[in-house]
Image (cartoon, rainbow, N blue to C red; front, side, top):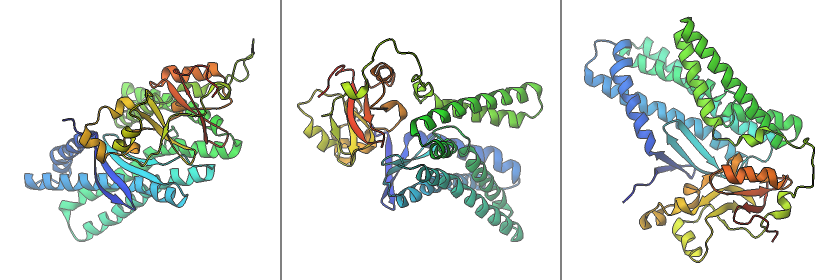
Length: 373
């Protein structure tokens, strides 16, 4: 029997809080680093058991800080009338799954800034707690609290790096979106800026390491560059290039002319068991996850088939679907030639079609190359 990819432990404000299996790896590494390296160096002469106890407590507080960071996003999203499908802690940190993308630039700006603000407030809280421990002479706690103040500050700073889909990239997109009033163009510009910024960090880190000027700054620059490049590789780079100004030799059909209007779809909040009962006679491989014409993601039958029967009854569509990503949707006025690159590169062979208000109006698939139903 295969285990589910993530475990849901409890809810906050009705939001399911889950832990991905990869989280346990990074949690163990974090505890080991605190107990074996950091605490013995900063607080010597304590019993070994104390280092392990403090290491576990510090690590739990650190990941609680990450959860609070994501809850910051979630709280503002809820105030903006956007439901949160869940929060997952994983090896790279945490992620809050919004039911749909913000409809305005100001809304996205508020939601994006909420997480880093929460981290900075936590840094201030632990800083004052650090001062109190010094005055009370709690030497054994000082290093752990100082560490938590520092990592929360850097967590806030790291998330403000201007690379989509990090918080800083979303802030930049919100500003460009509000200025230019064009969501797609703002997304493309944000991706380009993220690529340039990652390249600068990469060069800066290599120069510092090779010149031995500042190895620590060089290391963190390379790490930040790696994280940014990793995120950028998950984005379809066709968004970067605007081909609208290229000379047209002949009229190319648009997506709106060939899309399927009666498309396979499913609601996000039904169980996988209920979903499979309704699609027993269909040969469809992918379903758009849609509610109130808002795209939530794409559900692949290949992912559904990985679940056991017992898991299907306790798992919901939003937990298995592939979340909304630029590679999974195209505007209705895009040429079919450009849309084909999405179909052949996103791994699903299908995309949702959205209108200028970001509402779902159709479905495009390699299975239906020229349908106009």
